[in-house]
Length: 259
Image (cartoon, rainbow, N blue to C red; front, top):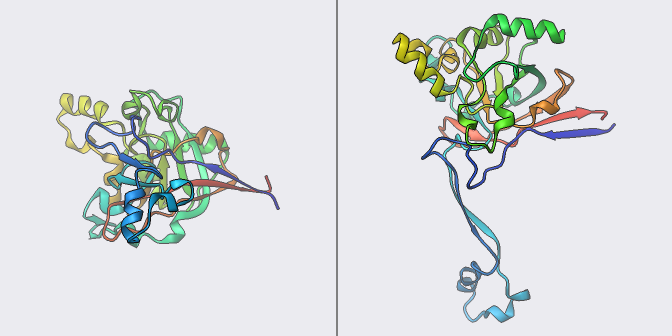
């Protein structure tokens, strides 16, 4: 058996626009020289010259929110309740079997930025790829945003999943979804324009808020989805175990057996 693994995750890194202002990760790199005094303090009498090449260790100090980088959102992120009134589960309570399942990719790269994907769009794409959704399959959507990662317009790029489109997946038994965009929903800048014209608050975060009706998780800021076929792979996306949190970072990958 030949196994091939495709990385679906972005970096945690400085100086790349992956989040709105004020939400970016901050990483301080402490190299083998800068850390030397820390090491010496553990061992009285030790001198820098005693160390191989005079080096200590390399470590990093990271300031993050749980939604930086490629991460998995728990139902608790969307609302305090799910499944019509139950307490929403946090990231440490997400069933692990949700996080390792066959993957399905829906290709929505042809939709313009700000487009709200509908249930009919989901049905049309499933018909195009000839697939019937099965319970617990992980469905990821490939949007234009994936190609804009690292560019100034990344946070505003891509289409987003509307309430009805999201519920179409959840009603089929899907419990974990994903997107290569900054958000599962349409980028805020586009929703803000619609809200300003209509005053309809139900437009805001409508895909996320579908979790109030049927609890689910989704991955955000995936990458490299264009390398995936529509089906024929597994997705693994186990989140970091942060007690009571709304999300956890994950190294999401696609796994192909037999090449």
